[in-house]
Image 1: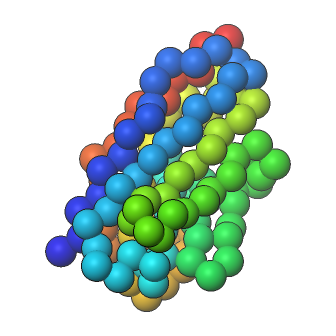
Image 2: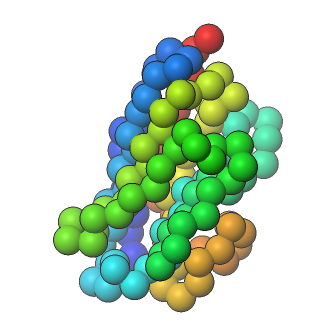
Length: 120
C-alpha cells in the first residue's frame, strides 16, 4: 500500500507562487508515475501534470507550473508560478506503479488533497 501526503497549499495573491509537495511511502518510488490533479468548487477533477520518464502538463498550466521529483526523498513537487484565481482548487497527488497517464482512473493511490486559493 502506497500512502501519499500533500502539503504546501495556502492562500496567495494572483501572480504569486506556491510549491506543493507530495511525500510517498512507496519503496520503489523512482518507478512510479506521479500525477497532480485538481478540483475546483462545482467542477470535476481535472489533470494538471504527471511524470514518470517524461512529463506532461495540462495546457492551462503549461509554462507556469513545473513538476519535479526527488527520488531520494520519495517526494514529488508542483512548482506553481504566475498563479491565477482560476487555479483555485483542491490539489491532489496520485501515484501509479505502471502507467503514466492524464486520466485519473489510471492512478491507484491518492492523497487527501491540499487547498490552493488564489485571490484577485
